[in-house]
Length: 277
Length: 189
Image (cartoon, rainbow over all chains, first blue to last red; front, side, top):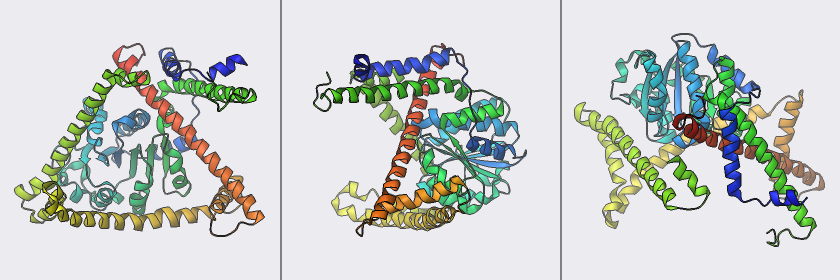
């Protein structure tokens, strides 16, 4: 009892150290805990896997670098998957970190032979938030007369025959924010929308999946790991799953210890009197 | 920089403050360069090189936003571009919000009560809505239903908080992976 009470009062700094160790150890020496693929991920994978060579997909980058560890592994997996199928990707950015992120993620594919302007394009950041999104969805070349590098979009091979969002075969967005903006402005174009969201905001997007306004949902690092499993290509996300599970176990244990400690103190008449120490 | 940022967890220190300033400075510098790029491609080139004179209208509206910085006598200039931005933004958002977030969500909640999932969804929505009846004195039945609604809200918050923790752990994994994978090479990539 005394041990549980003391564990509930442990200095938070020890918890930080422990959390880093609990995350680090399974990454250095993987345990190999099984990854179960959720229905959300398998539905999204099936949709993306149905695309044919030559199809064109939008990747809308709506996250800042501070949210990248949770959402970026999804984008990495989807770039790998779609490029391997010969699908063409048009990258746009709803937030100003987007162009930099696109350059970073496409660099290995350029080295592998993907051609800029033919297999993919980075159109860059368009200021104006939701208004800008609505504008380019209605007329992509008017909103983006040039790409991020200053090339003319009207003569670009990848954008031939594409005028509005409805001309794309699929729309994928990645965000550290909520999905509402894309639902409001893109779902009216009847193009299948797949959302890659950080884990924090994903529950808010689930009603849109039920109403079929979103065709698929990929949730954070876990969604990326599930996607990698379906691709049979374990990557950075899969490597982090053991660490994630162990960190959750640790946090559950300390939440239980904290509560047990509180009730023990309360039973002794110490709770709420600042007498914990 | 990662170690410096994490050092705040131990205690506030000079290293953390330095890193914080570098981060803010680098972010501001990046935003300025993106803004400059936007000005160049969306305003300067179309106006000067391509002769699209109508671009002068948004450029002038944009410049009017800076009026107040040149004295209080020019503070009125900001009202017109702000009115335009708010008007267009509200027009675009409200129309879509009513259709996509209200009408379609209402339609997708009117489900046939044939499956357990559907029963939970419909009962959960009705119970939650009943919790927010504030305009009349609740009856005994309504109090019972709204109590169920309160539990639905609590469970939703719990699930959202669980997801929040999972997301934050992912951020820690990202930094640990960087420090011990890309930097020290302790983790095999």
